[in-house]
Length: 81
Length: 248
Image (cartoon, rainbow over all chains, first blue to last red; front, side, top):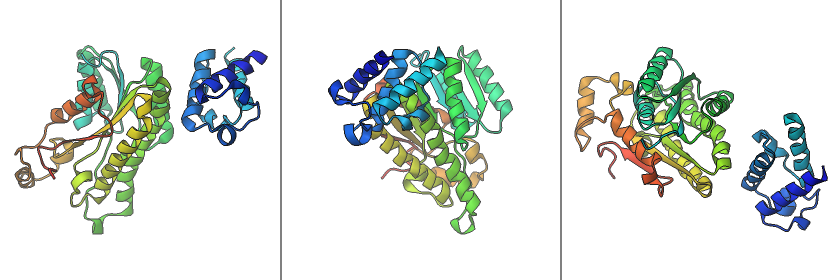
């Protein structure tokens, strides 16, 4: 399960153009990392593609930290399993 | 066939300009989902007509004023045809009246269908376009929204709103490979004009430099152009198809 967190951290890092080490699990995306709505959508699309799952766009509002995204990804991975 | 295997949505597809746009897309090889509110028989006939053209179309009874239904429209399109490439926001109504006689309901009904409806459908579709980093939107506005026409304060306001929407969204999503344009028809021979008296029609024609009413094909050809690769460097524009009526 640790792998998911690391994979998503790298994916987020690539999209927001930051060093993965800078993305702490509880760092706030908007306030601390400067993530905008379009980046959030790219993160969502990236996760959907990587894990071949569908995450409803309503979930975007819950993309607040790395932790929260990992939790959402796990939720939908288990639903699709 | 320039839109071969593309998947398109046309709102308000059973009559007038919308119907001609559905047929144009079908002739060019696209699979089309169109919406209608009242005319189930017309929808059936249009589906048969597109099939005869060797294409596929699906008519859905959806009122664009209902946001939840417009979300279903996008989902249904993707599940039926496997994607979404083109959106033509055409659905619109008129409730012409002098402002002093216009009820608040007549004002709201037009704004709700023409402008809020366009928001509903586009909002529902935009995430799909953003995710796939491609998409093509054409909004049908009107010369009324550009030069203003008496007895159309409601309609002209909704159509001017569509122009602002088109320009703003075009800037917002250009980086994602999505183009957004509008077509502004002038006086086109459709049901919308059929209620007018002949003498009023001839008076209208006197004001048109090209001296005739427009045909639905005049409009669909402009839509075809904006949706095509030939327009790949064009976004946020309003193409006026009015025989010169609105020349400024």
